[in-house]
Length: 214
Image 1: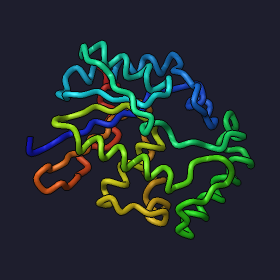
Image 2: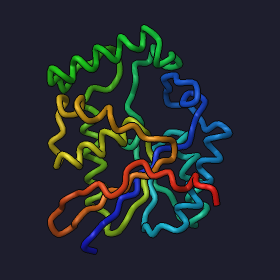
Image 3: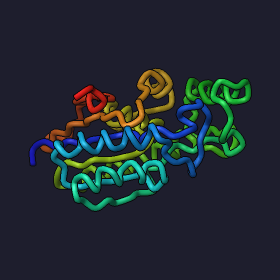
Image 4: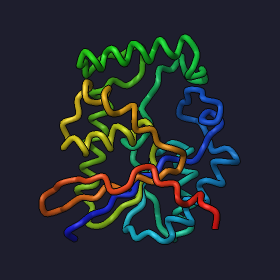
């Protein structure tokens, strides 16, 4: 295959997504999230891909299960596709709160300073996330065909920025571009790889056509 397509989708909506609070591992889809996942699966029925992959978090597994049933495919879960870890003491805290904004300001400053291993508390550092991104790219390189991935908004932004910077993403560049690439629940982003030259292109970003009226 001379061209490979990687379909990246964020999981369906959770209560934390709807309320704007920081979420941890255990969040599950709300009613809207299940509706979104069903529409995503109906879209996926018309997409050709050979393998289906997911984060191990329940909200991602719930989402990908709709696709697996629609396509009659098995799912492979990978720990490296999990969401970027927030500080434990901020789980359940509003993202607009003073406490959460202080965390964001400190993280942003660490990116501006080019710090790879800075931690505000017990969250993942930039460097730790990039190691998981590298594992994800290694997965893509090992596959023989197209793949569909269900993961998380923050992690997918890291992944997209990493491949579009020719695998040279650093904290300063991440601060400049990563926070202008928000993804919607079940939005589809498509990466296109020329296998001969091993170059990546952004084919589609955050496509929500599956929500259009029939």
